[in-house]
Length: 344
Image (cartoon, rainbow, N blue to C red; front, side, top):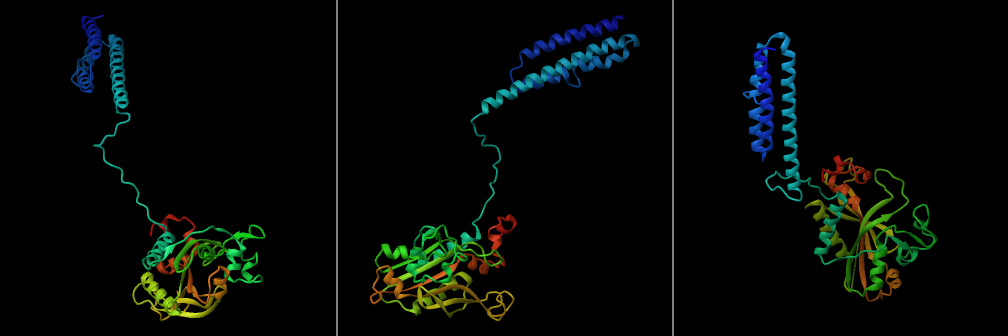
């Protein structure tokens, strides 16, 4: 072995010892970085020894090269272990702390479902007029859902083909009018309430029908109420929801619990009442049913029909939303299609 090779191996051993002693005194990440530059950097003693390997005799190069590679592997391993130790200590120290210097994560901003938005808009109008909000059970008995509201026993809506019965007496309410009955049974007039909520009917699913839907019904009882009051209230409501200039009309109809009764139409906002595919060429769109409370209903709840008079109305929330937002299929409200819902 030549003197040059012996010198390189001796320097390798000395470098290994010096690097180990220096690593033992490393106290933080800055000192570790200085240690890396000194012992593993491009200008380090190890780099210099590696370059001098080429000047050794060919027969002695393999042994010297192995010594240098082993030293490099040991120094790099030591560096990695110390680096992990510092990282673990930092992670442990940071547990339970909030780094206020980090950029925040902007939360996704949601919005109300169009049915909910429409209900809030309806409720805002009527509560501003002094109506209170009433609520009631979705599982009703026949008396509150039909009997008290003047539905005769042979009325078609009592048939199981139209109504979701639980047993012979109990059913899922077909409208929110039963709550009006409960309010009148528990309160003396005068009163004015709106009743929002879910309703259920055995309807086949299509673009305009769904077994579950939402209604807002209203009831006002006092001693000096006329059909003109009802018409004026709903005309103002139509302009509030669909915009100024919206026209409204009453068409004669029949409901067991009101007399006289009417279907309520508004002028088509798409064609301004001229006629278009949206309104079927009629220029009008139906939004509600309404009328003066039938005297039999007052008698059923213990009110004197000679003393009190009132009006009632009911509107489908989905129907209002479809007209307001130009939705042509009621099923879109229930499919949880994010692309559809995020428009609102």
